[in-house]
Image (cartoon, rainbow, N blue to C red; front, top):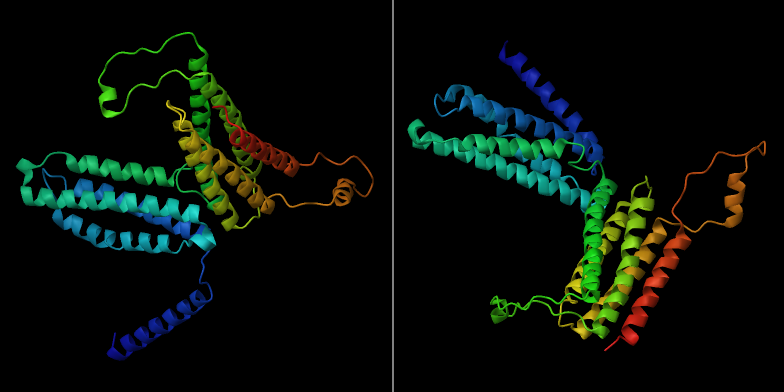
Amino acid sequence: MTDKQRAIQALAFASQSCSDALPALGHTHPDPHLILADIDALLALIYNIATKLALALKPAAPAYAAAIPLLDDLAHHPPALAHCTRLLHDDIHGAALAKDVRSRAKEIIDALRALLQTFINNAAAGPQLVGEEYLVRTATLHDLITNARSPSGIPKDNQAAVYRAWKSDRESLEDNLQEIATMIKDAQSDDQPDQLDDGWDDIGLAPSTKMDEHELARANNVHQLLRLTTLLHKRIFLDLLAHPSSAPVSAFDSLLVQSNLLLSTSDDLVAAFYSPHDIAYIRVQILELAKIATSIQTQLAVFLPVTDELANRLKALNVGNAPSSPAKKKADKKWFDTCVDQIVRLCSSATESPPE
């Protein structure tokens, strides 16, 4: 090929690169499904190369010549993975999704770096001083990538990410409810707690004493309150998050923030019931629960639009006035409003005249 032909080929390649770049200017926010597909492909490449490196750089007989092209190829993938991760914007694609992907990408890149450092250490130490750490590092990287690519790994979208985080919060809320129920059961039993001198009281960690009558009444009130907040959280999980929704990603993220606040406040409230009770602190946490419930009610408006009753009846009719197929059950706005109102009332009564 002559120099002229090479120059023409280079010009054509440069011209094509301009053509390829122009469409990208009109897509400043790529489709998240495409981004996730690219991330999945990169993870598969990293997995395969790590496997080949473990074979090529086996300490007993390292094949460095075979490892060089693998390492040259691998060097492009961590930056590409980081680039794809940065394309996920909190305000566009969802904060929950972006946080999940960033966390997994960091774990995988850290594990890959640790594996590569192990190979460097092995090369410096010599085969006689090398163990099987590289196998452990390879297995760790494999596990992280396999988990990320599995159905329970990287969420398919922001709603799926919120759904998963909500489920985790729900389990913790149910644990809190069970914990305070156990406190009440223990207080109502006739068994006396052991008062052994085990030394914990010397550092301010003496075992909790049994609740008195007033503390038990206060615990029962809060148990009823937490039962309602946990039920509210559960119904949002089952009636809203489990079904496709056209709500904006920001609505899901804002709702998840309230879920996190509800969990942290419930944690603090339950912890406050270990004797002695800090009544002022308990009141503050109860009032915070009312505030969170009201915020949840406000944010649910995006998911539960008010519909006209006449319009609902018209939708139920068809042309032939024949029986229509059963409509898919939708979340009941009235139920959520009633539940929140009941939570607010319980909070108000618990803080106005708590038992002393």
